[in-house]
Image 1: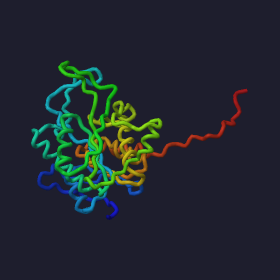
Image 2 (image 1 turned 30 degrees about the vertical axis):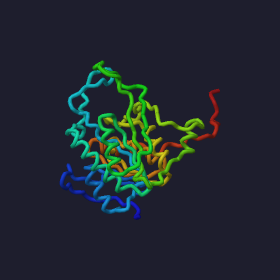
Image 3 (image 1 turned 180 degrees about the vertical axis):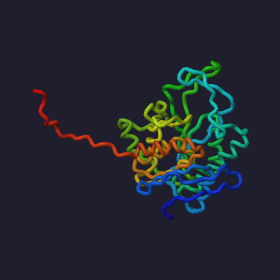
Image 4 (image 1 turned 90 degrees about the vertical axis):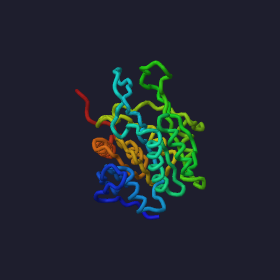
Length: 294
């Protein structure tokens, strides 16, 4: 199994691919590479270069297909939930076909004992789970991410949505997946960690460089990365968004490859990553020996 090397130049769009792709961030020292372009095209090129798989962990936050004229509440105001053409539903069959295609490519890029994490609401997660079964993956856990501060329900016709599901699956039934049980137990006060996690939405400092409509909290990705990978492992995010996965990976001593189709969001990810990697001033622990007033 060869060491990962980034694909340089332009990756041309083929049949069914939306746009050319190119490498927009390269950090060989830390092993971080970000692409702007179509994830299917990038994954095809990487799979051809690494036929035996190359990634230890993949996190994916695919389109939820919610941008169909609905409304939600944001900062106390009624706003449309249309996030972009990438989030528009194309019907149940087409949506499921897309999920199966990107999942198939991710499965091929996993190492034999690698795992895949996928987040989603009920709009998409059942399709993802079914596609995983079709492809012979082994579902390990269904994590419920509980949001203590969800937006209020404006329609008042159903319960307020306050959770998302994160599916954790191994490449296949023979995979001996990594799970850092002791670290998770230690971080949970010495108790076994359960499959219901509570995290607030991304905090203000996580959006200092701009906003992404489906941005995940850094704390969520930090837990996923630390739970199912080891230092030095290589992580993939095919729907990188604002770059949270890459930041979590680097902070935990992992490497990362990300793909983002939206130019503005790809630029946002690069800015956030640069900020996260910027050296922080070292605070001196020596006492202040300067004479005081008088």
